[in-house]
Image 1: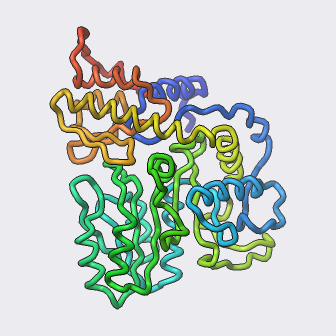
Image 2 (image 1 turned 120 degrees about the vertical axis):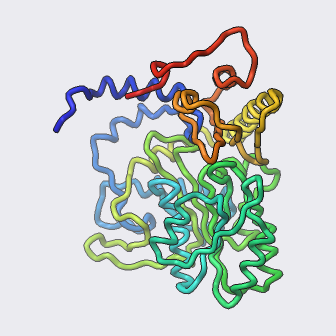
Image 3 (image 1 turned 90 degrees about the vertical axis):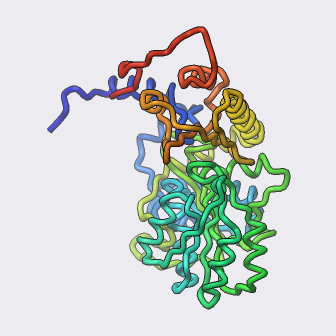
Length: 380
């Protein structure tokens, strides 16, 4: 039955209120895509492989390939060996990347740290893959000694290794050079590396002096990033980038295309949104990444100066701290885990906003007192 209390006006008001106080999840809310509204008059569906035209004309595959090419240039994947597509988000990208590894090595074991995103463990369940959880260091990074030990115990089986570039809770970045060194020391011949870089994949190329996510330098199979995080999109989306020679395709006659993607029907608007953002802002992505990092350091130092625990990993904008009271958690939409919470600093988080949070959460002294009630929480 229809809920008479719901309306588009109330929804818009709810979204506007929530967007003002949103710190716990990585979303770039600096959005400006009103000029794309005329495209909403069409059913845009990127059916089939993005590199095959197909029979369905209402598609944006040209834009999709441009987006993939931009990401490929960031990660130095040779154009002749470039494949990828715009996904529905980081989870689909991870599912696709892990599936590529499993198809290459059907008897492979999936290795991933205990701090990995839940979609990695979901992939293991969906694809019926043996999974080995690797211990994490205290900062959320994978425990390299533990990984080495586990790999050595199963040298007779291919290894499908997930590397995190920005773990979900602590924003930790696994060191690909150390992992490749372990693979070399153990003389593993059959392995596949997938990188979950949902947020960090658009930070690390601009924060690191030399981008380590380099297909020309390391044996990377695939990378998954999110589009609605750093780049920013009103539609959840992402990009999977992979080496073309690893892709298996299956002909779909009625589409006059091939099946290479996780989903069949795919959002045709998302590639245009990402393409538009890249065209307008690609020359300022470095500035945005550095500014987010500097604001994260500002927040981290303020909390540390209040003699509270705080953690900020290198190459990250995720600041971890002790979980404040429930009203603060709800008002600022914080993500909590094991009595800890975090703020993921994005482009729309000014220092003025961060100061407001610091004061309300009690991390800095001020002349005002905050007695929040349920009326201060954005309830639909």
